[in-house]
Length: 265
Image 1 (tube, rainbow, N blue to C red):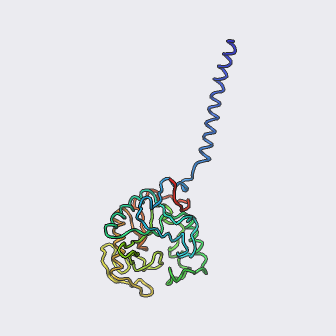
Image 2 (image 1 turned 180 degrees about the horizontal axis):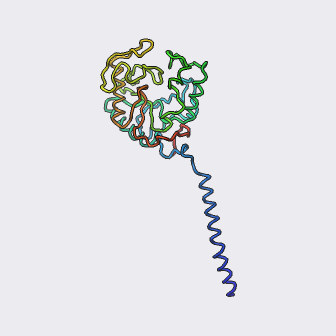
Image 3 (image 1 turned 60 degrees about the vertical axis):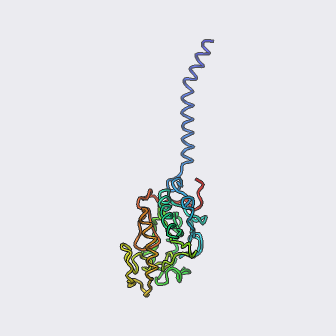
């Protein structure tokens, strides 16, 4: 009987550690199998309208009304996603402009790398000029990539960039900015016909290849949007009045790949 107890205890001492090691290995394998690539991780993103309920969405790349003329790869639903930090700052912008009688209208936010790749492929298909009259009538399509209207990497893919305009609650129309979203040309520059640093309208339209211009009122509308965005932590670029990126973006070096669709988290 004593020998039986002895050998039983000995087996426990020998086998139990082996079982524990095996279980740990199995658990480790399971974790590795379920792990998510950093570029596929949506945990730090939110659905924009959850953070900014008053925002109006017109997701152009889910539709066919964009410079390509078809739905863009990676846009599975007509929704907008942003990092939590960018969404919080945009909510503050929304609260400010609402007091002036406006709502934010969103054209695009997070853009998956698959969508950017779609743009690049399209830019190399030079004969495809379906939407030229609406978005780049003054340019030959062959120069779009060379002049960086289309690039292989986009700030949108880092998750803290948004394209937007203002919606006038009194007229129930978009505020007249004197130009359309995604217009390829100097007329889209924030300094077109004015000084964005001072907000002064100058009427200087010399950069327009065909003599296009915008009015003092249209320039001022652009400045209302710009100043509200800058006040709440976004930075502008010098080529698009509608484009803003959070200054302290949380993922400055990560280009995400998950598709655009409403998040469950």
